[in-house]
Length: 365
Image 1 (tube, rainbow, N blue to C red):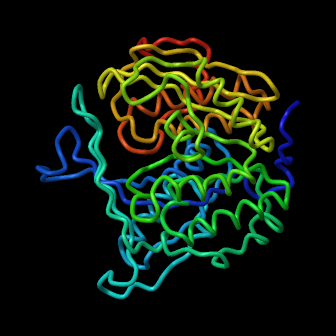
Image 2 (image 1 turned 60 degrees about the horizontal axis):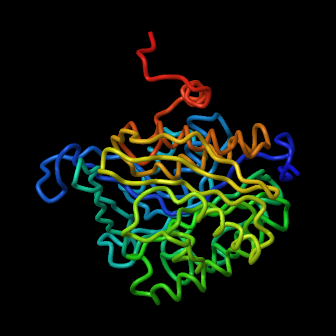
Image 3 (image 1 turned 30 degrees about the horizontal axis):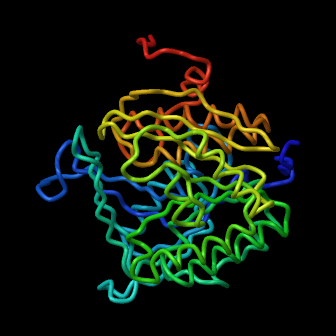
């Protein structure tokens, strides 16, 4: 049975995302601790999905977030505008001139290479996004009057503060009220939860949000840490993609949360920072669908690969309403996004289609 996605003609947007957007500083092939220059762009786990749908797949997208009203905030807005994402739902907080009360988030991220893994050093305290709370957003305007076919958010935004968790629940309830599909990427980050209750708090919050989710996305650590499901035979010391174990875990998740119409997970085995096995599976309507497995795939920048998987998955359901197509588009888009720098995709729809169809990396001219 296909999931029920609202008709495009009845909605102003194909997707609206709720999340944090940070300014990413990338030291290129060097290290943050020794850098003398950085490439700069925007990124955010939830936002990246909406941007991917707009930039690669041509869907109408908007982001709900908050910035401090200063030149850094306006730089972030400029990046979002370049990605084609609607900015009308950004909340602007008055800047106090110092950052004592409100500021914008920064994220210093190394790509990693070989035996040196990718490394992120976020600086997100007191950001406008983490201070968002219920009542800050007119969800009736977004989902009721203007309309969106899909709503996406995730565990990074929900973990920023107690109020962002409450806002996430408020948003999911409003989306469900208006028949909008809700997707959620668990995106577990231990560093975000350790000062506000740790693992127990992560599971409390995420299991409450999960009640309103139609499409749940995450990897093995996400499901284990955020929702408390065990993946048999998988730990930080185990290598290899344990597909059967993931399938059993997904069955348990759907049994606990029958509102999950789709459960999708990426499958990654890290040989080095620049060589990973890459795949994905998707559960829908009682069946599992596995994407093309890509062993020993070369990676340039892994950050945002999971978000690009999510945007390809959403596109597959929007365009074809077919789980097999969706997981293939997700895995292909994620693979291509990891061949370029930055959190956000630089892939084209034609490139994704080519890879889904089995195309090679031979020169295209």
